[in-house]
Length: 463
Image (tube, rainbow, N blue to C red; front, side):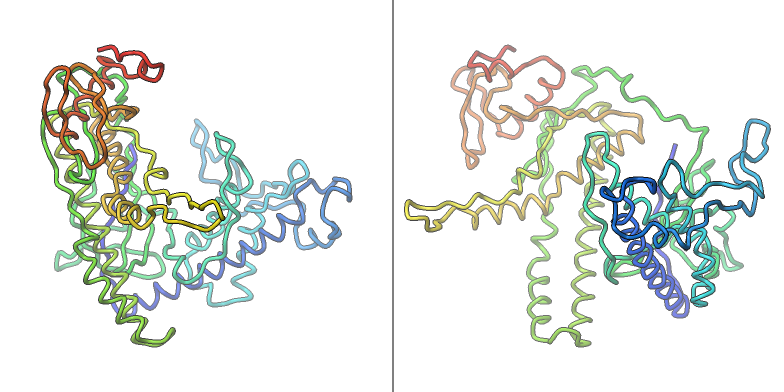
């Protein structure tokens, strides 16, 4: 099993200077390697032996003049075979050009020693941190050049500004780097930086080993995230749990109530962003009084960023608390599958007969979209799935089509507008809160007890 635990760091003033220096050097190296990679990508989209009419007009000799044909391994590899011997050994030669294409990641990793010679300030960076920068560039390029299982690719990688490059990673860290001093304070030994105090608010689980550590700078402080792994803990197969009426719960997500369960439990919408809106607006008004680049404006930007970070942490804490509270009572949760992009999409512009734009209701839609973003239902569903996987339970997404327009008891269609918050069935006489009716129907659809698919064909739904 793999886990990730995040802790707050408390570096000294000198350590904060070192951390920011490292972050800036990593950012510069990332942009340099990215520019190098973009230049190579534009010039070598085809193999080196391709026809000149289908490849770059840049001469091949110019592109590959600084790239050796082979590289020599300087130490034994970390991967070992069944006998415990390294798969690759010191002195082995590996080609830099395979099937007509250059192994750019290996070439850039080997070129890091030249970077340290030309720019001595890079010598203070730990080798793992610098190598991870190249790995990040390679990952960005792999997403750009190689489609995923759905045939989609990400956009062209962008250069990182100071506000967009916020972390660096130690690819090899162990439990031995977590120590206690003579006063009992928790410390982490970061190679190249030293002992940094941290808030170990929860211990590392017994048996789990620290594999990597990512140091991140956020608006209010520095944080470190440990990647933990324990191969002895099996990953439970949640598909083995068969849903029944007694071990499952259906939930309906909304804005009047954050969620309503099929058991009749209501959770209010916290509205963290709405409650902090007045304070946020005041800070933003004060910021606009100062010109760009001034010290007061930078200070106000920091306060605004800290307030946004506080809102985000409160929201995430709320989501985790609700997820654990629901999963403590049941083993399977049926939740509606939400198309979040459609929920917060802007209204299409409308024009009259003369081609002039007319009101399309976007001003009213903007407030609804803000409420959806504030509730963050997508983040909650992701957290719910992760907590269920961690506890060996199950979350099943159900098509929500028709669940708000049909009765859970007789499946009779009872049309309701968005402002109608009460369900009254004229067929069977059921009267209850609208979202509660939807939660029960979501549970029935998830269990296969009820089906609304016949309604698509104009037939009566079958209970």
